[in-house]
Length: 427
Image 1 (cartoon, rainbow, N blue to C red):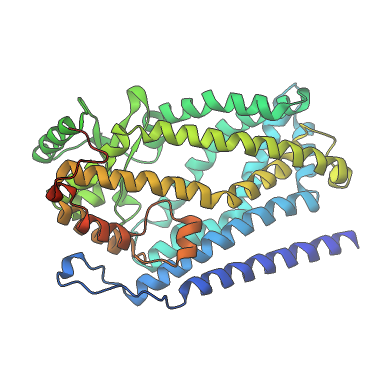
Image 2 (image 1 turned 180 degrees about the vertical axis):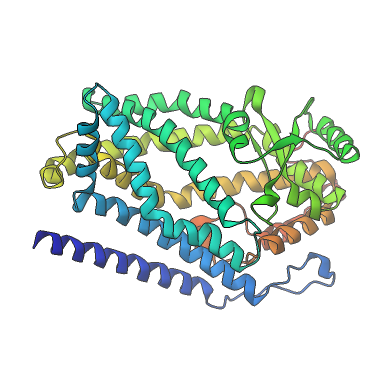
């Protein structure tokens, strides 16, 4: 009877999440009061197609339904006793100190990945192929999934076991774990470009020497000497376009996807790189880390309070012996997942502010408004994303300003023509 009641509750939760996601996306798909205005110069107008709208709708559904599905999986592992059984298997396999927790976490990662694979396959393989955004073979897709799984098992099982030890031994474990997360995050950010990223792709210095010379000149004007610019073979995975900055200190670099280099002119690439240089010069990596750590301070605090109260009330029913028990992993992740989802609009808004500042930086640096606008058009059409999302979708999940807004701004921002000083780039 208890099992039937549990399954019934899980089923209701799945139905509720699916319904909520559908309502949200349908609301976002309704005609908006302000329709995109036409432009005299069609170079700067994104050609929105039915395919683009459908792709955007599916991605929005996957975002909300995927978040709900993840939380349901975690709750199901608690309610059905799955987490307890994983812990018991790990404890029977080894009696040595610390190892059972590592093994339990590794098994949990594998089990969770298997349960989540239908959604992973649909969003990461089926949808990109349906909309002709990828040529990746299924074998290559699975190879990458297995690589990611292996990295997670090795790294997370060790760090997670140490975290469980701290939860078991310390009264205010939230504060200690938060403090320990600072050097850990810095370590990951430093090693990611040279250790983690090369597991999945090949990174080489920019091969186009003429473009490289132009970029170095632009970097010098931006105040960046000896900047490292790389290209990466993302075309083996996707047809979309992108560039980014990652790493800190000796591993900081600007990375351009080969798809972007293939489809953009040199002037467009320079404006995109000027945007990335803006992140570099304005120290957005450090500011983003500081913001994330400040936010995570409260997440860790709330997580312990909810975690301890939950175990006191339902721990026996779940088969969790107490704080630090590997069987409590789904409960910890469930709390953190809910808090992260609720805070998504805050994180997105902060990110949009930094991205807008970088748009200002590259316009002031290059003064090539049209090249930046046409680059944005190619980014939107290359990803088949609606350039004018519903305000709610923008509010909740957009980490960058919508493309249509960025195009409008790129074409209109010319303070130098009015004799006004720069806001972000200081020559």
